[in-house]
Image (cartoon, rainbow, N blue to C red; front, side, top):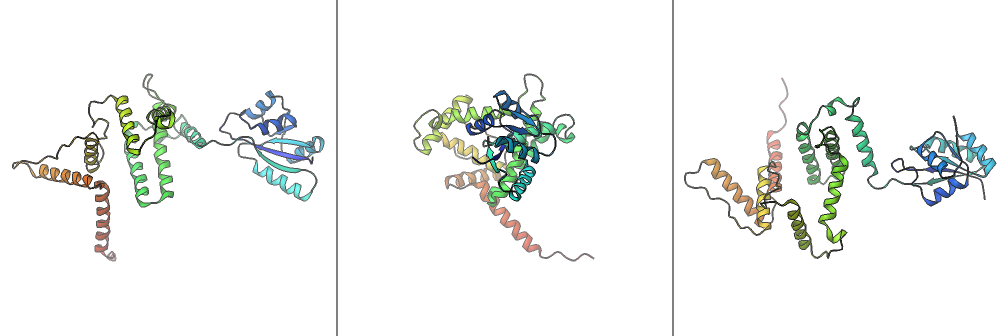
Length: 328
């Protein structure tokens, strides 16, 4: 078998000992070199591997080791040691026959691994010595930013701009991670963390989707939705079908949501009819609510419809303004 240098690359977001079977075989069977002591080098030693630390440039020590042993393993740094890989590749290309260069992945980032980076970065920003602005925030001071970021994500969805949506969802995630980090500073008994947020979400998703996690029969989409609502009502023990609605949302969307909740349980409550002595604002409110009810009956989204019409009217206003007059 020809001589080879194995560059072993691993995920820095997983415990050091979680290597593939092939990776464990190679580090147990051959000499291992590394540029610095690490959790991975310690794990290899504890499993019986031979690890030698290299002080300084690693190319020549690797070539010397492969000449003596036939195969040698290099424990790559988290960044992948790309400079070393390029230097070795050029050297072996100039001197064919010295060894073959092999890249081996001992572990990979699981889906969602970069979320751990987001939590780590936010912890540094919101800790002593980090960003003074973030450390000065509270849940209340950030509330407006959370709404703004959600609206910007909504705008990206309406525009069909998936690249912008990816970025805007990152800004929404920033708010979630920052709120969770600030909650770690609350008094005892009130404190919670990002793990509590994620754990609660996971438990909820498993609990409310028994057709996926508990072997329940899936049925139709309508049956799945109805089952979700039954489980949700049992969890919340609410007194009204309207409990849980965000009453701070815009009035048009709020009206549609209230009517939708009532219709979901079969409550046919007609919109109010103002009396003859009603003030103009009450009459207008009743008329708008009736319009929302008619839109819902027609399967239309009144919030989206008004937004669309308003934006179109804004374009008309801009066109009517004409070119700006030259400054004098």
